[in-house]
Length: 190
Image 1 (cartoon, rainbow, N blue to C red):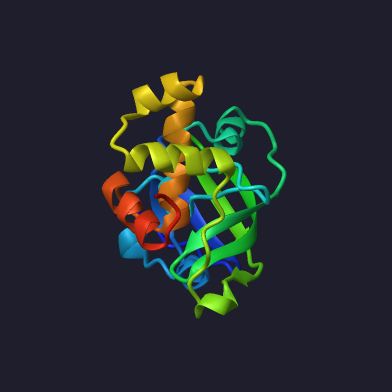
Image 2 (image 1 turned 45 degrees about the horizontal axis):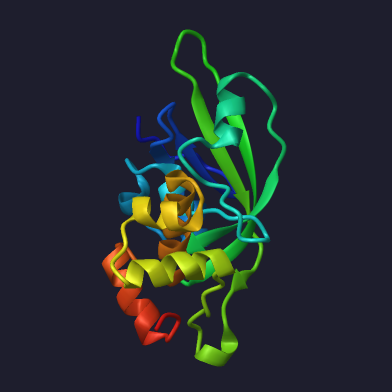
């Protein structure tokens, strides 16, 4: 199913696996991400949503999607999502739609907020990394693997991987190697 749902607000549909199956024009306009790039990808990988403190909201185990799958009503949630121009504050509502005898469809409706850019750097946002993320980034720059970083910092390997994912998002990178190079360019690591 690759239907486009008409709505004045940004709207996209996803399945039980959190894979995007529909991405309307308003979602494309809000995020700068075309439907051709969004459809088929996990919604959490596209939105990369974080709360106002930088805490991870969008991930494989999305609580909003899980609650919607279980039939619970899900309140709208404010978050910062990734866009082609930086980050944007949005309100996201999660809705489960069940039609007679068919697989349920889940929808995220996004109400627009403000684009967040760093004006001093000419539109390129300064990354907001936590002290722990900077520690993990420094260890990555020294060639350490996630397991070794976890052992050294006394935290779970899953936590280290979450920090790495947030580092990639904040730096706008697709790999750890690219993130380390970008961090060196920005003098975030020695």
